[in-house]
Image (cartoon, rainbow, N blue to C red; front, side):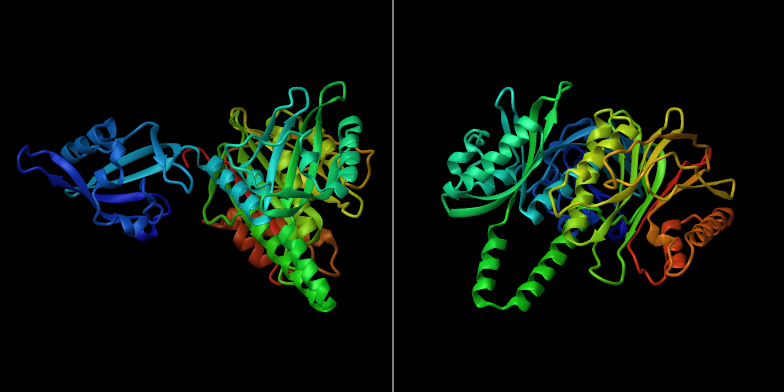
Length: 505
């Protein structure tokens, strides 16, 4: 039974002291797979070990006394936030948990949940993306000269973590001389004209010459002056070396096949890091949230459909669903830009229409040859007054199912991103009622070749309304809708199913 539990939990058998008659320790007789101790041992590796060996920090704490109280009285024990250092690759990570203990015969069933679970997963996905793409980020304060690097950037530049990061002014001293003029000119335009920078160049390190790509954009003040620069470094050395080896062999066909396969593999891994598969329902800002992504069965198999469902610092929820035109690494890269930029702007207080205008500018100022378009729905939910505020950029409208009746929300004005620099957006508001269901989706769910789009939208509304009316019909609704409406999967499908539980549910 413990092997099937989705979260951390252990079964403890008390070990009584023959001298004092009190519990001196507990033996772990079962452990769920996600249980982990301070040494990094997980699941079955913990079975047979003692608590004070695996979790020494609990000795003598209120948690330890709570175990004893539950064992004596049978009353379940629940702790408040409990600080704990979680095992990690580099160093222990301070975390906060809530712990619950319940008596089972003469034993204890102890389970715990992490308070910063979403932030933990977001950080882990960012580290995965940096590692998989050989990416490192940097921030530079133009006024103070202060420079901040991520750990991956230190590795890219071959510098030790205790070294100070290179300032913007020091960077040319490490660039191969032939590449300095092009980088300097791009830097000048970045600082004086506010133009984003996207350049490849070479640097000298202790291990030899490295090929880097630098993507940077300015952050301006109210007067338009650049005050900060946010940048990404990508190590292209391995790619350049592979390209040179292939060129020397003059096997053009193999070159194309190899690059395509590398792009497909990288795009797939990056997409999996950005859009992790969800095997359970989440709760975001009070809304029960089911997320679902399914790639197409044809073509490159890596598209630009994406979603985001996160709780913001003020307790509200941000929900986004979008579709970048095209497939492959460029579509995934654009998707990543939109996903993280949208989150950053909303967190810092930008209204939804302003955020869409800036996202449009981001695509309009993409480097030549990398211009793309995208559609999306951007929504914010405030649980304290149940207000759903949404705006869209040429995307299909959300579907509301209320009382078993399905209808599409009337979309406010909004053109797709990247189509024109002259654009404006508006927002709509809806008061969400208990029992309401909201569906956000991409066009792969409703479009069929040779069929009018209205027919697909009508089919989705009928299916969703019928499922809500049926007893138990909303369980795994996103999965069942996808199987029923798009069996051939000619295009990627992304679907968010949001529910405000009815009173008492």
